[in-house]
Figure 1 (cartoon, rainbow, N blue to C red):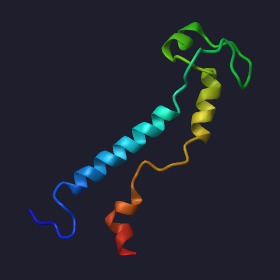
Figure 2: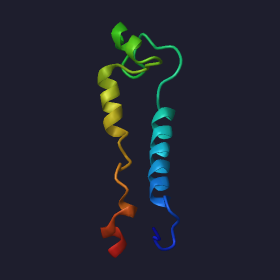
Figure 3: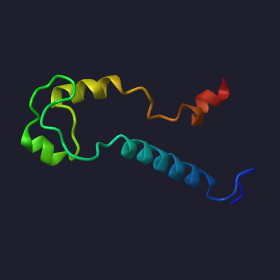
Figure 4: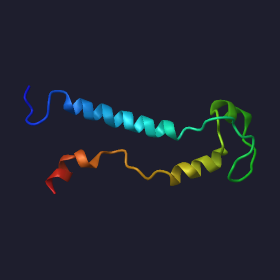
Length: 88
């Protein structure tokens, strides 16, 4: 099926590339190495169950939740690809 300037499968390739980029970003932020017994931020003990569940953990649950809230800077929606943004 002819779609103009793009080749067949170009949309799927763009979707796949977006997913691969997002996965690479998430994987780069995963902790690595030995888990700490005490939180880097507040010094509270990190429970053993958390250390086993998340290898390389560095923050307690409370500090991790706060870091996750402040670290949410990127939008997960591709606004450049939306029809509304193209009409402006």
